[in-house]
Length: 179
Image (cartoon, rainbow, N blue to C red; front, side, top):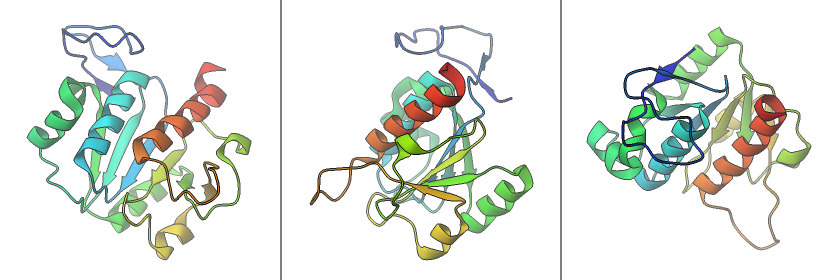
């Protein structure tokens, strides 16, 4: 199980309790994978959510911004130190790693037909979210074990990725962690 440290001045009232030196256990075996993210601010928001809710994040490179610790700290504030983050050089490396873990890959896509609220999540799922600008290519769609959709009003293109992640992670954790 992965651990992280919450900063001493951590004050989010929905997060795990603050601890100065004790590691904070990840609450869930759940992982969120970001496929070649475009916007540092969205990635930082997702890392903050991960730190607060206790799930891990995988970034599949290349990203559309510099993934330096300094850049992520600026977008994710002081929550980056508490987030369990793994970087993958490309999708092939990520997929090789995933295959060794036996985890199911669940793709959030505007092209999916099944609603996320109707899907039966597993505690160790990897929820995959595509680029803000283009989603994921066909070969990534083909590798996914399931595809889910956040239903929207007709004519709207998409939600902000951080909002979609929060909605789907919330439902996943309701089903698998919070009961």
